[in-house]
Length: 134
Image 1 (spheres, rainbow, N blue to C red):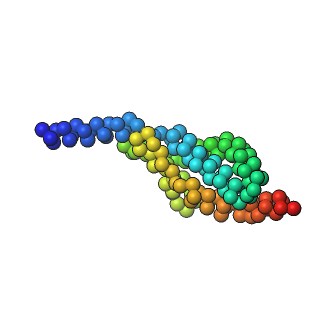
Image 2: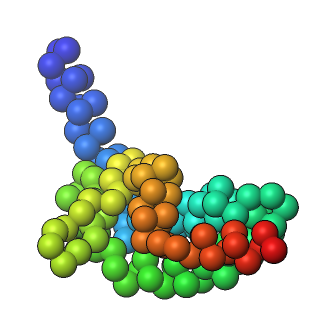
Image 3: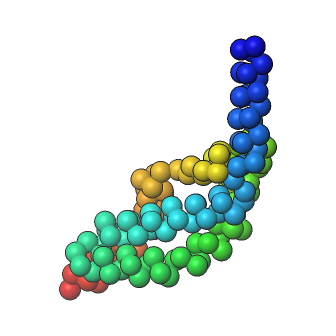
């Protein structure tokens, strides 16, 4: 009897996982939110002062729509019925950027993303600092 109940519960969990498996739109939306927050934090951190907060808010407005469009184009979602993986195809490798399970999407953390944005931004923040310190 216990085996039958355990089997029914296990099947129930599998059915719930399959029904609530996140789709492409869910992965794109979550990843866009993480990128926008990361850009905002990076601008605040590197520009500093009151200007940093203003530029962070402005960057969030400006990048919002752009990021959504880019994320929708570059992310591929593989649906494995019980879970899904969001992937980005880079020239040299394919990177998993999100995992979806039970209607939840988990993405890379903002700190890692901020570091990547900072590395790719190069001297842009130095230029902003030098322009605002005069």
